[in-house]
Length: 89
Image (cartoon, one colour):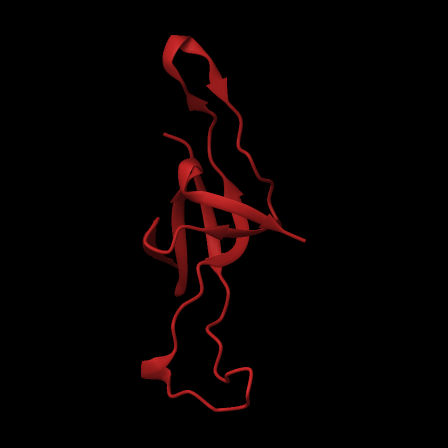
């Protein structure tokens, strides 16, 4: 299974209309910046799938996808290639 390490974007602290949200009400966005691309994914039949994104890409991933990990005090997400939904420009 291929994985990508993503640094999630900060949660919004204010709504579009200007209401300030307390930390407990802030929802973590399912998007962030790619920090590391994992190894190629081995598919059935011996074919491989290269990482679909590159380091520095801003991506959207499935809300419940990925595993949260901490590296040097930073919260990161380990996301499967299959859980990536889009690359933002």
